[in-house]
Image 1 (cartoon, rainbow, N blue to C red):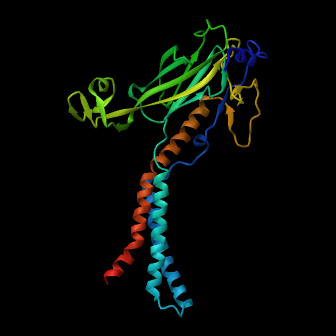
Image 2: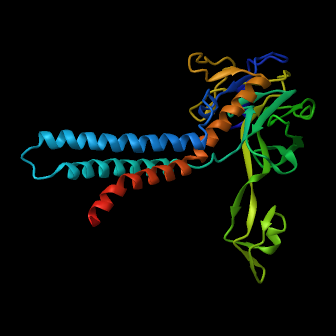
Image 3: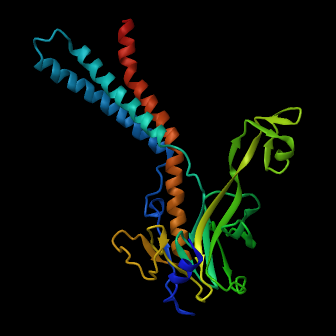
Length: 319
């Protein structure tokens, strides 16, 4: 975006103009139920296994009575239905396993959001859904040329939220500037194994185990994984409010000067800012993450369910 275009964007902006700070709700942050306990989930799968087995016997009896000219007997029909249910369970396990896994970024910047306009006195807020080393966030603001404009270490509160208010740090800025805001931290919950890392590089990482060292290379070291979230915004020195003008639409490769975009109240895509609402968003995201991370276990349950359906057909082969 050229400098002239950036200036034209704010030709109607007023110094000191107050705008309501909005939060953009992501799909994983909308109202969701707590994940089901694993022991209850086991009971559900057992109930499905028993109920479906009974259904297979019932369908076998019905089919056998209808298909009088078919040479297959009652137990042959039962085996057919059991194998059908078993195949469906294994397919369901494959689908669950494919979509399983953790979210990529357990750090979320909720303010400002992408394509927003910020002024002096901005508030930046976010949350985490994991435990992080030192219980802190490395917060950085830099321009599009990667020049660092502002740095701060932000503590993570007990409820998993973090925030900072920036007042006069950009007072020297005289013109509209595109900036990138980043939150970065190292998890002490998520671990990952690297294939090969130089010893000099490994020294700067949060190492769990060094793995096998051959010469200056460590093979299969385990480290704590780092996560980051970024938001690209536009800083306008003429805006003095403590807040963010949410979601200035981007179209045609440029930014449109729309300070009050129409918001859908039925979908609740945007809501007024409050720390209580951010805490709710975090809780829903945590539930979402737990459900996704458990899908590997759910996939295993489906596989065991499928094996349960195949027990009788396998036994019948050797009888």
